[in-house]
Length: 249
Image (tube, rainbow, N blue to C red; front, top):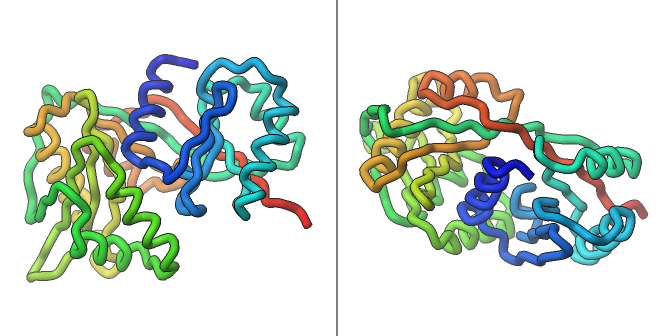
């Protein structure tokens, strides 16, 4: 596995922790009540000894027993034999995603009308769930628990205009790397540069806390977001995607 990919994958695990993590012959299995593919996926990051057929069967057993689909997160650095075998077994490829990075040391950002907190307080959560149209109580409780379980430095930001939240996002800092997460703008307020404002506000705050490099994850068909990130200075580092399979009855 490429060292850069491995580093960013480990950073993202800590920035978005699963509720339960199992280690299986170099593979990391993450469980979080089905909330997000990232926190509910098999991650083949390290060297393995057991055969692929045996391991895939065991992973299916573990996820299906919890009523969850089996989701593999694969990167440009993953053994291509894994991807090929999963495809042969009927796993669908979904959500191809870019990981983008940016050197912050020569960049300057502006702090907008942003309220920053060191945790996801009730006002931030209310904005995030409202903008994202979340209504499932289990997923909302899981999202809150995941945010509470982040043990690195976390910054949660809300852009407020005329007393109302219009955008929110979060940043997690570890080892001088700042991950940008949960960027969402209230649908009626889109197209007013609030996405840029929340990103710049979080980058400004992270730099002040010593972040030297920024990274993020963005699905490859979200061109509006990608163009925003390119304008901010991000460049693509690598790609990942998921292989997805539900239990057949």
